[in-house]
Amino acid sequence: MNDNKVMREKISALADGELSEFETRRILSEIKHNPAYREFWRNIHLVRDLCDESEDFLYERDISTNLRARLRTDLSVETNEAEERLSKKKNYFMVSLASFFAAVTFSFFSIEEVTFADIASQKIDTAINSPEAMNVLNNSVSDLNVVLQNVEINNKGTLANYKMMNSGETFKLSLYPLKEINKIGIQEATKISYIKRDGKVYVVSVSGNLSAEKKNLILQKANLSAKN
Amino acid sequence: MKVSNKNIDLNLVKRAKKGDYQAFDLLVIKYQTRLIATAFKFVKDIQIAEDIVQESLIKSYKSLHSFREDSSFYTWIYRITVNTSKNFLVSKKRRGELLQTEIGQEGDIEIESISPDSPEELLMSNQLKRVIENCLNQLSEDTKTAITLRELEGLSYEEISKIVNCPVGTVRSRIFRGREILDKEIENYREVNKQNIAKETS
Image (tube, rainbow over the protein chains, first blue to last red):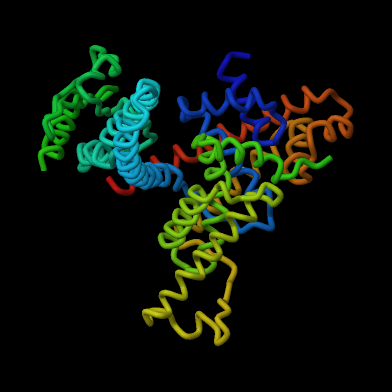
């Protein structure tokens, strides 16, 4: 069996509660990077729901992608509030420590530095994970008859896979900060464009089996969308 | 020897409590259709039902730490969904948007069996059911038996292996083989469906 089959067999076992703790951890990290595994998990439960005649059956619905985006937004708001609280707390400690515990300030600042780094990462995370990033991508394909197949959002950027309804052509559309340009993996078929917004430069890229005209159109719309 | 859903979910719930969103995501995918069907029974509008389930799942994720692992995750999230649906109807009643017949004198809400939103949707539900049923019927006897014992009877791999007299590993492979075939059929069905929709709209 190849690796893909092995993973799928494990997903099947996970759905039946027959997987070890160690294997579960591995599966969860693999599913993150492979939407096909997630889809396999979904289909297993679709069949299960259908076999369970006590349950009413509705035509398949998938709210999981929207839910992920909502939670990301909600939780980043909470993170900002936590950040403010942390900042107030920090000021209080700074004054008291400077006055009374000079000897231990070195170790205190070591801890605080880690916290500042965390906050900085959260800020980058929030910026690139903001719903605006996904809006830019969605607006870029607004007039094309496409379906969003899956989306990968992390603190490096946003990558969405789309499919043209009429032709079945698939393509990837991504938005990254300029410093992450090496993440795009530029190939011959990739077209890129730069977007400047709020003093930061982002790279939007489109790749896949689409015509060059369509790719240009998508990039133009991405630019327009970001400027509006 | 039955493997309860409670135990299957517990592993994922524990991981989600530690902040692993992927584990929570798998629970969402597992239960979303059932939960939307539940909310739909109350609100009778598929879009609102989806919104209610989304709200319920957000609430549950944020209060996951308060979920006691001695009960089942599905029962817990089911209760949250029912309460959110009821609250929606009560607020709708306050705004005077709900017919008196939809909510009883004592606040009881009439629950009817669900019917899909539109004739197209009903057709697609039935078609998909038929596709899966046909596919199940065409599986080899060994595979069909393993899948049936697992999905209809809820037996563990070990229990199935005793019934069909073969090693646990073989049961695991047969169930997987069956699921691979079903998966392909479902994906083919979706693809054909998308193409048909595209033809109609172009």
